[in-house]
Image (cartoon, rainbow, N blue to C red):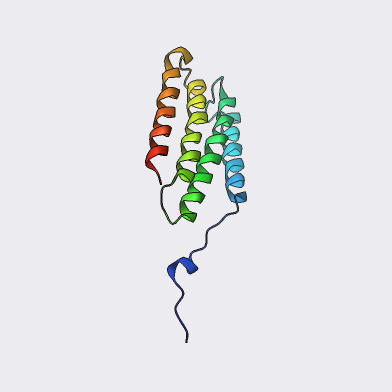
Length: 122
């Protein structure tokens, strides 16, 4: 008897992160090219953009786990997602020339949110 495949059998999840790395390199190259020809200005903390790679990697991991878990938010998803917020905050502090002395409580808030999400997730 020929049975139709279930939707889960037809779904393919791309576990190969190589496309993400390639896309990141292309975007970085375009940004530096635009800066070199004077179309944009990167400012004096341009290197802080590289800190965002940690956020991209963590959120990519969270997304892959989310898809693999049947689109359910679990501790395995919230961990990398919340973890990606920390390098995002550090990069924002450098890119927008924010004062570390004023911003540091945000790290405590994010850590508290992580603890709350962790206790509520399955």
